[in-house]
Length: 381
Image (cartoon, rainbow, N blue to C red):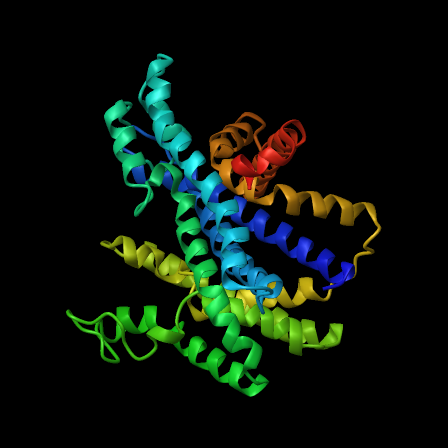
């Protein structure tokens, strides 16, 4: 991949990061509504804008996965060398920061803070307990489960799974024809309809039942489809700017309309399960895939000079990106409070908060990398 191609990848990464941070910047708004009592006042306008922004930024994770497909398919070198290079860079920071997150509630107690600070720092924490035993219990579960204190860590389990699968998947990708890849993507596209089919038609379908979760579309479902999609667009799509916009804009508008209206409908129900709340925001759904493809296509057409200041700035984000992901949730509360303190208008509150989170996280990771040199990889990836 040449330098020009790497620049648009960096730009795509920035877009995905900002979307991700907007997604998490909205957490305090939702949490305020969820935890509200008769005494607590919740600004309904902020919650409404949280829903709008939350619906718009759902492509964040799929864009990261598509980027993995662009940069990693086909895998170069042996399976062993790929695992040795990729997995430790992810695993060590993940373990270190998971421990830090899970012991932070206990640390707030040691520092004499009230237990309410736990919910303030971590919007979806299951409990405000500051007991060391609870923190250690979370640490003990790291090999197989994440806590909602560090809710963003779910992604790492999925990412490690993709890395384990990549060399195997890559062997097929290298040999597959364009038509064969298209057939896989078609079957994957059908699989994105399963969340809605399971909710509105039949819970058990296409061979799934109480004793079998692996139905007809199981082997084509999930994030591997986004990986192949990123690879496919990079290798086969050479559209003009006009054609790109003609395809991308309707996909983006249509995908957002389905996502937003569907989520609003679910939230209007008198009773709803957590699965229903997340239904229209699920990453592997047709509406989110539509928005993801639109964003990818538009950034894919960007032309940024490799030797420009913007390219250098974007390259810095790539270097610091994984570390930003690891630490950013510590600044969600700061971004939320800064928006309140500065009286930022409701429509801009979430992107403003996301910008605060990005600046703080990026600055700290860049500083750590400068001070620690190559050893920073263990901590920041």
